[in-house]
Amino acid sequence: MPGIIANYKEVLNTPARRQVLTAITGGQLLVQLSSLPVTLALPSMARSFGTGLEEAAWIVILNLLVLGSTVLLGARLGDKFGHPKIFFIGAIIITVAAVLVASSPTLLWVIVFRGVQGLGAGLIHGNGNAMLAFAFPPEERGRAYAFPISGSRMGTLIGIAIFGIFLQFFSWRLVFLTMLPIGLIVLWTSLPVLRRNIEALPKTPISIDFIGAGLLVATAVVFLLSGMHVHGGEETFTSGDALSYHMPMHALFVVLLVVFVFVERRISQPFVDFRHFRHRYFTLSLVSNVAFHLSMLATMILLPIMIEDGLGKDPIFVVAILIPHQSFGIWLPAIAGNIHDRYNPKMLRTFCMLSIAVGFILLALFAGTVNFWLLPLLLLPISFGTNVFNTVNNATVMSGLPTEDRGFASGMLETTRDLGHATGATISSIIMAMVLPAGIALMVASESQHFYMQGFQTAALAVVGIMVFGAIIAAFHRSYEQTTSGRPQEQASPAAADD
Image (cartoon, rainbow, N blue to C red):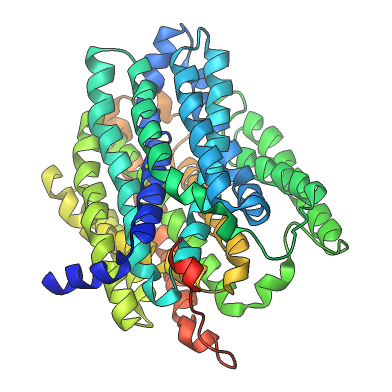
């Protein structure tokens, strides 16, 4: 432990570096606080406005749609105007929108301002990684990325613990007002970095292809909607209502994607420069990122189903199991970042994905038979693999391209994260729909639990296959020293080291 602390002192050796990490960590905490924990408030908000959960679900849906479709645009705006400036604007938007949500008189206004919060989150996500890559050379990025990842986990834990109290004894509006003081702190800590925004500006002016940006946003929105159950009827992919919705949406996504690629390949300064994907190891690390985040969302979707519907437990038991799992994200990224920077083991990401696969195998085999309070032990391989891989892969992606392309790398890192989340939700839902019998809603709990456990086991084993695939892909990725053959290893300039 003393050795790890000494290694982190090397990363925090200037006030400017500490300011960058403080700002980015606070921004990640704020974004995480405004996303996953907010789902806890949906039933209370639905009751407050006298509506059903289907309508209230748009509070989450619109936020995810805007976030997932604008993160790359936010990164490109940062390339043009400076990443600290766009990051700061994102923090303003998400904070102000939180206050507006808390004071909204109708559900419609809550949904609209949640979409605005998604825009702010997209600007923060798209630029935070680029700011960190500008401030730290590749050999220090593992340790640097440990800070925002731990901040993100802290946001989840704070939300789960504090929001539950607010919802039980006070009002859902306090959930969003909590983001005001945190947002103000993030803005205050970001000011020193904002003052040095000029150092992050490109040496040559950048033109943004807004036609391509609009096409990409539309394509991303359609893709995300194609995996969501916003149609009428049952939440499946096999009913008549589902097929008449999902099939046209999937087709529209393919058409928009083809049009987007066609247009971008004929523009001199495209919004997405496909030449970046010729960097094989950068592309492979993005594929691994999709697979990894698929498992993360699959965990958050499948575990509640297994615990509530398969084991017949109350929702509070889901929180009891997830809190130990999430708590690993507070301290384990620091160890992972130190290992990555000091030793850069080639097979570390492969080992992490295999660890996640082992965890899902254990859950599939034993979750229905062991004592309930032993579930966190079955989750240990997933907790370990998740919190080590996230830190290491972020550093790997951001070191896969030259420093001048950090905005594109940052945008693609977050875009593939959202792609993984959407894919994880879609695959988990499809498998559960295929396994569960059509009349399960009419069964009593004692009859349906067996089928829910079967559905969970099948979905968990599917995730295992995807993790093994991701592990194989990660095994072919070289370290950043090897990818820079023929040119000097990338180093931060004096200005970069201070920003």
